[in-house]
Amino acid sequence: MRILSPRMFPMPSLLRFTRPALLGLTLVTALSYAAEPAAPTMLPRPLTLDAALAYALAHSPGLRRVSEQLAQQEGVLLEASARRRPSVGVGASYEYTEPRQFEGFPGFPDVPLPDPNAWRVNLAVRQLVYSGGSVDARVRSSRERVEAARSTMTGAINQTIFAVEESFYDVLLARELIKVQEEAIRVLEKESEQARVRRKAGTGSDFEVLRANVAIANARPALIRARNAYRSRQDALRTIVGAKAEPNDDEQTDLDVQGQLVIPPASFGLADAIRAARIHRPELLADRVIAAAKEEIEFAKAGKRPQVSLVGGYQVRKATYAGSFGETLDGFAVGAQVDWSIFDGRATQARIKQASAQTAQAMAARDELVLRIDLEVRNAHRKVAEAADLLDSAQKVIEEATESLRLAEARLSAGTANQLDVLTAQSALTEARSNLSQAQRDYAVSVAQLRQATGASTVQE
Image (cartoon, rainbow, N blue to C red; front, side, top):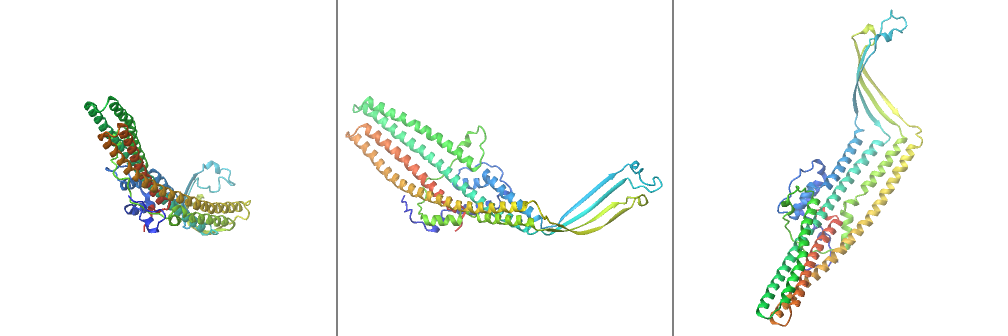
């Protein structure tokens, strides 16, 4: 596998690292995830990387939490927009008064008494016609915050994609390490058998047989740890994608993961990576938050201005006096209402100051975020370059270690080497294979991390 120079990184090259099968799903998820969370289902078998990503996007509790935050902001926007529309209310009341309470009326009992039963039903309509700009400012602010929440959702999707990819490659690494240790034990067992053959033939000794058996025993703990790590990494992957394991169900431990640690070679350029991050990282759409904060200033300023509403209604009530018992009275009433706080103890000025400070904080946070993302991209780019060099080195060592073991076995057969040379060569090959698997995993993860750092996980060409 040839690793290209990390100094070459055209923009289209970055975007080709996206997964086309997931692009539509991620966009739909970002916009409508809150509509209805997917019902829990079993992980598909066999489990490929694309299947794990699709499952995580549909079942991740973290994404569901962020989607509910988006739904909350959409509710805030609806609430803010409601003040633009008329409000309609219906009220009703009933009251009974004991007749003896009327005995104190002047002229009692010669004058007609009020009806002890009193009720009324009224319909009221109110329309705000001027709010000093507060309603429009709050609506615009809420709309910007909805868009910011959508960006947060996209960022959460990117984070989830990377987390799943990293965990998936960890599972593949653990599986490869099991194969490495099993192959090492097979070679050692073969040497142990050959040592017994040599002893019977008189060309070997009990010491060689014993040393071979000790080498096998020393190799078994590494295999046990590798198998346990494989189970543990699968459990971690299941947790990240949001799948629940049934209690006492050992069959669910093995996810039947299918895939390879080897990925196509990639080329990256730091300047293009930083430029891509500044364009595509959803977190950098903080201008929405800044715009929302500025609208909050306008909303606070509206406290200095009057608010004018048109009011109207229709009322039906029972007549009050004895001469009209059994009759009802009804009619319309319309008017206007003006509310203007001339002096509020400087509360409005305080709200303006708070909103201005929040705007300044949002602007500072965006500048800080730009610096942090630039650092993320630089670190991720360095990790890709480092992983590429380590992978190239590990591949060369594999070739040399394999040849070294072959030569040691040949020399032992020819009587020009001893058993220790073979065991040493085998130990070196096992270490080289482990290092190669680790380097392959590190390279795959570093490419995924750089893709996430540049915001390319959900970007279409």
